[in-house]
Image 1: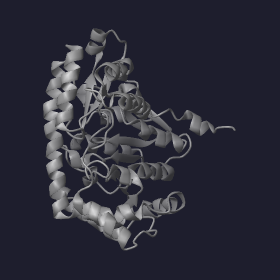
Image 2 (image 1 turned 90 degrees about the horizontal axis):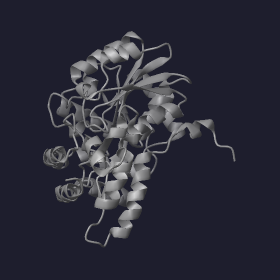
Image 3 (image 1 turned 90 degrees about the vertical axis):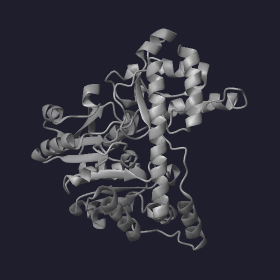
Image 4 (image 1 turned 180 degrees about the horizontal axis):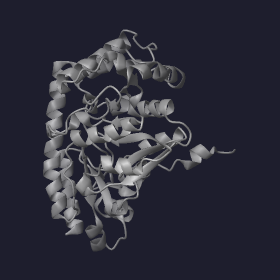
Length: 394
């Protein structure tokens, strides 16, 4: 059987390859005094709030499981529109919101709608690997631009301007970012968007961690700029619905029929049960619980990062959102006698039973020196992980 060249160009998702190895070892040590602690996957340890779970159960009991419109339940689009007004003070008409089968489907639809074969999309290095593969799957090419800690590991208008070429179609940014947890300052984003607009290009911003922002100056939606920008969001992270596979995108009005046509053919519609459940995300009781959990994620960050620094795992930029720590492990590698972050990750997996993610997935700009810790686990797990790492590294 001949495999398509398109499929062959897609690299493995090494985050998941490491996760498989960690799960295998984890099963072997599950009943020992040191079971595996998983700090490798970006998944909240919280589940959907009670009202959301109850809404899902009620939808099933009431038989509301049929297809919905390809763009999603009108009531859910309205709820999201209201959330933008209440949370960010930004008017986002429901008519511009399209519900999708997770943020992944939203990115896929955006790339399919806007990228021609050979088009180039500028992205920061490091960045989330699947984003560049959505570009590749649409026969475009992701151009990774190295970033520095001084730039918060984000692109700048000057770098976008310098990298823009004849085949450049636009930029794909993330704020807050995976793996760094850093956001783009609104002024910097405005400057980037102006450069893109001057070239007639597209600005796509992955905002799936926006609800988990910890600083007011960064916790603003890119949609405040204008209606020409495209925002991708999700119910997975802030709303704690990872396996429900539900997200949304906000696009210019004229793009909605195009996205709808593609969605009808590629996905038919998002999960009807997940959509009915997600309506309850915006009830006051649920929103209050989400805010409590956001403060808990911040508390975990505030505990864990100083511990990493004390062990020589330097985090060059304080993450202002999400639940990640992008740590330079070069000193720790030297201490353990391993050559890069890939080997370092497996060393602590095998010796300390702590699973983390090496930088290999996220680009090539010094990523061999970095690992990503997820602080989405409980404080008790983080404390135990620190004790084990200290025993190994100090």
